[in-house]
Image (cartoon, rainbow, N blue to C red; front, side, top):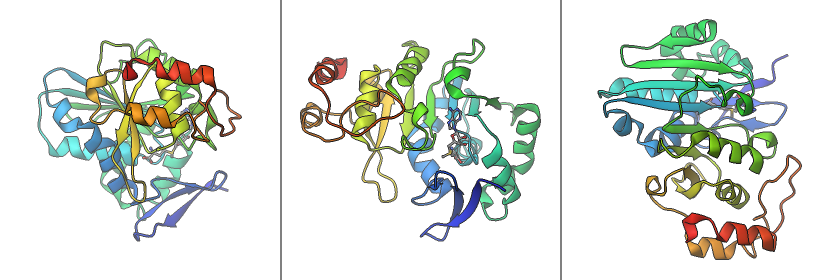
Length: 277
Ligand SMILES: C[S@@+](CC[C@H](N)C(=O)[O-])C[C@H]1O[C@@H](n2cnc3c(N)ncnc32)[C@H](O)[C@@H]1O
């Protein structure tokens, strides 16, 4: 029995749902539209990758490959001198295998079926002279430390939510990710969350954090970076001030997190982050 099913979104578009977590992939406006708004456009990957040199995308949580395919299509439609590497990460190929079996329902996969099958078999596929796609299977928290892996300019961060995929949302994990990014390569991370607790966690992990584009019913999402100038709308000191009384502003310190108000010590730490100086 598969852990996935095809669901009809309100827009009429179809997507995947994981039965065990009851989480729908790209639940608002559908896989391609959401992937384009949230990751491809916000990351300005077409513009940023057009410059000479190498442009590296980390696609964290390959899942049913909507984010990766949206990036691929945008890059294929555009020109540019830069060499692009898409590095997709997942600990399982189950959602992708299910999606390929239902490619007629999820029509975004159909034009890229052969490419994706090669990626699964070889863990690598050369898309054209400019674009290469790599697959890294395993727990991202370990795999991201592989010495051969180039640092990213762009991270599509798309695990399940902090409720059902808690290990991908802890302060320790984000500190490790922030250290892994270093400071040399300016990098933008995009994600669907608007949660205060996640924003606090990212700030305390050493990221600069900003308001991201709204998508579907979400008024806003969240972006993070290792360079402040990458953010269009950094979280303000007014946002910081309100965290003192917010009921879900404590950082996600462990996998069994309960929503609660931030402690005085954590608030002092948060206030001392460079973004607010
Ligand atoms: C919501 S789905 C991603 C949807 C996908 N980005 C797409 O466009 O179709 C979340 C994915 O994150 C993967 N994932 C969760 N925890 C992970 C971990 N620790 N390491 C690697 N992948 C993980 C899951 O297996 C799942 O495929």
